[in-house]
Length: 102
Image (cartoon, rainbow, N blue to C red; front, side, top):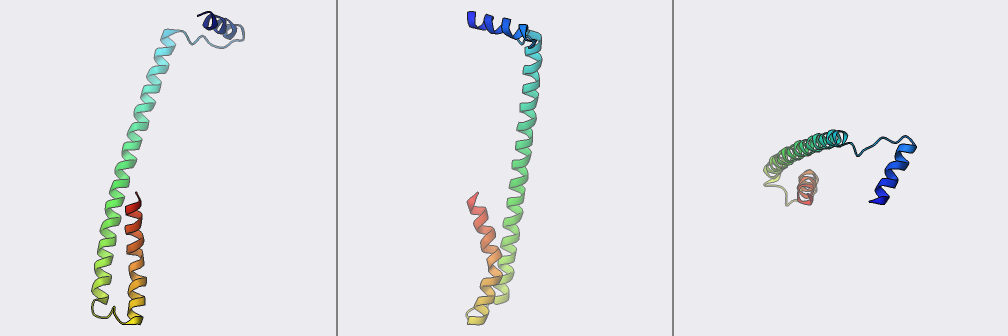
């Protein structure tokens, strides 16, 4: 306890405000709690937006895959068409890989 008293006396001597004032501490605690709630809400909103974007990316990649499969259904075994198929499917593969990483 002596250390606390000495620190309080030193703080007062150099003009540091007295943070042992319970009203001030309550105000600071309320501000900290309000900030914590704000940050928590922002994080929830960000997570919701991320999930929404993930769902959209999955939907887009699935639709693109269907389009590419349909376009090359009969010809993708031909070497030249296989290269085109692989090229056109690459964005689908990249999107699906990104979705699996997170």
